[in-house]
Amino acid sequence: MGNVNLKAPEVTVRELRLGSVTGFAGSAEDLVGCARCGKLADKSRSFSQTLGCSTSNAACTLILIQDAAVISHGPVGCAGCLHEFAFTYRVNGVHRGLEKTTPRHIYSTDLEEKDTIYGGNQKLADAIREVHRRTNVNAIFIITTCASGIIGDDVEGIANEAEEELGIPVVAVFCEGFRSKIWTSGFDAGYHGIARKLIKPAERKQEDLVNIINFWGTDVFAQWFKRLNLRTNYLTPYATVDQIAHSSEAIATMQICSTLGSYLGAALEQYFGVEEIKTSPPYGIPQTERWFRELGRITNRKEEVEIFLAEERERWLPRIEELRGKLKGKTAYVTAGASHGHSLLAILKELGMEPQGAAIFHHDPLYDNGAVEGDTLQHVVEDYGNVKAFNVCNKQEFELVNILHRVRPDILLARHGGMTLWGAKFGIPSLLIGDEHYGMGYQGLVNYGERILETIENDEFVKNLEKHAINPYTKWWLNQDPYTFLGGEADVVGY
Image 1 (cartoon, helix red, strand yellow):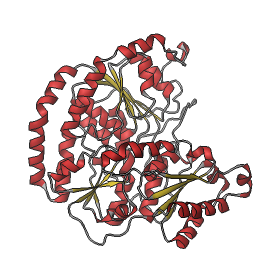
Image 2 (tube, rainbow, N blue to C red):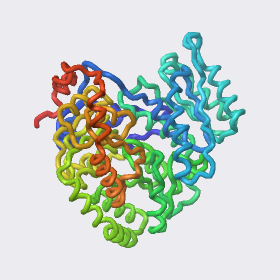
Image 3 (spheres, one colour):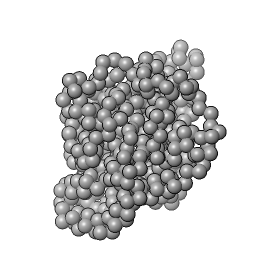
Image 4 (cartoon, rainbow, N blue to C red):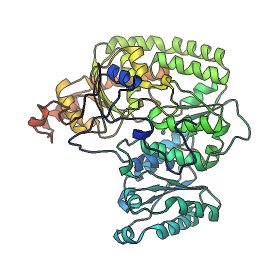
C-alpha cells in the first residue's frame, strides 16, 4: 500500500515518511542527484527565525469545504489565523461558480490554563455537539494544536463517539505544530482525515470525471476539459462532502501542486483505484505536453489531446515568442513552496529569463506515489538546465534578505504573502500571484509573461521605497555568507 496507511489515525510526518529536508545550499542539479542516489541529508540551523505551522495548512484543506465545520482544539490564539480562509472563500467562490458564498464554520474549544491541567476532553465533546446543533453541517473536523497534543487529549476516541451519536463524519486531524519542521505535513494530515472518513468506495466509475486537487484558483480546467469531453471534480475547496465522498468514482486524479496534493492522490490510487497522473503539473511547454498526453492515455483520449495541443500551440506560441524576445536576459529570483516553486522556475526558463536562484521552503526527494517521474525539480533540470543557487529553507527570511542584497535580480517572484516586501525594500520589482492556475498551459505562459513584463517596467514605486525603507537586518548580517547558520555535514556527499 506504499506510504499511505488509512488504518492509522495519524499520518507520519514527511521527514520520516518521505525523507524530506528543510536545509540545503547548492544547485538544483546537485539536489536532484542526492535525492536519486539516496545521499540527501538534512542540514540543521544553529539559528532559526521562523517556521510555518502545520495546523494552518491542515485547515486550508478543510475550511473551504462547503458543508463542513472545523473545530480548533486548543487555545483561541491557535485559531487566530484561520479567518483568512473565510476571506478566501468569499472572494474566490464567485470565480468557482458558487451562487452564494456562505460564512465558514470555524470554532475553537478555547483551552485555558486549567484545561491543560485537568484535560480538555469534555470541552471538546461539548463543542462538537454545540457546533452540530448550530450548523447542521454534513461533516465536522477537529484540528489539533500543540496544547491538546501535549496534554494528550483523546481526540480520536471523542471524535468516534460523536460520529456514532450524530450520524455524520467527525474527523480527528492530528496536525500539532511541533510534529514537523515541514509545514506541508499539515496538508497530509487534512487529506489523511478526508480519505479515512469521507471518501467512500466507488459505486460506479465515471469515465469522464477527473479529480483536481488544488487550492482555490480560477477554474481554467473546465474550459480545457470541455474540449476533451471531460468533467472536473475539484478537491477540496468549494466541494461538498458528497462530492468528496464520490471522488473514488473518477477515472484519474491530478494535483496542481504536488506539495499540496500528492498524499491524497496516492491515497485515491492505492485505496480506491483512481489512477494518479504522476508527472509534474502543466507549467512550461514540455511539461504541459507530457501532462496532457498522460491525461489522454489514462482517459482514452489520445487523439483528442493531440488536437487540443495543436490548437493551443497555434493560438499562443506567437505571443510566447514575442514575450521571449522582450524578456530574454532578464534575471529573476524565486521564493515559494517546493513543487510550485519548481513550476515558477520552469515558467521563467520557458520565457527566456535567467533564474539567479531560488529559496524553496522544503524538498521532497519523492512523493507518496514513489514515482521518479513525479519529481518536479528533476523535470526543471532535465527540460531547462541547472539552477546554480538553490536554497532549501523553511521560511528563513534572514537568508532570503541576505541573498537578495547580493544578487539584485530584475524581478522577485513569490508565492506566499509577505515575501515580496523584502524585494521591494531593495528596489526590486516583486510579483506575487495567488492564483495557482494562472501560469498553467500555453496560456499561462502568456499570462505570466505579460505580468512579469508589466512589473519590471513599472518599478518607480519600489525604487522610491528603497530610498526610505528601513531594513531590520544589520550590515553585519548582510555582509555574512547567507548560509552562515546552516550547519552539519555537506549535503552533497561524493560530488
